[in-house]
Length: 87
Image (cartoon, rainbow, N blue to C red; front, side, top):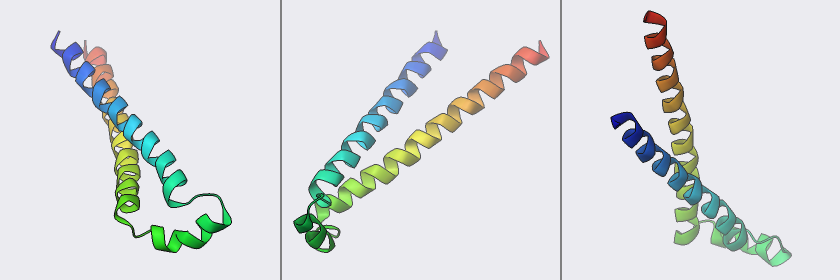
């Protein structure tokens, strides 16, 4: 029962970071680097803006967190395989 509760907690965390990462990427593309000539010319002014810096943080941290969760799942599977192999 405890494994299921922990697994559900990890799943909520994982999907939360996926949502944050997904939204940040799309908002950054729309707000900070619009695909127009004006967007191109404004990008040097928008890049250091607080909202664009926050979105970049969310993209980077979200991607790192998703990677870390995949690594944690891999370690868990290897641990379970080692336990099964010992029995």
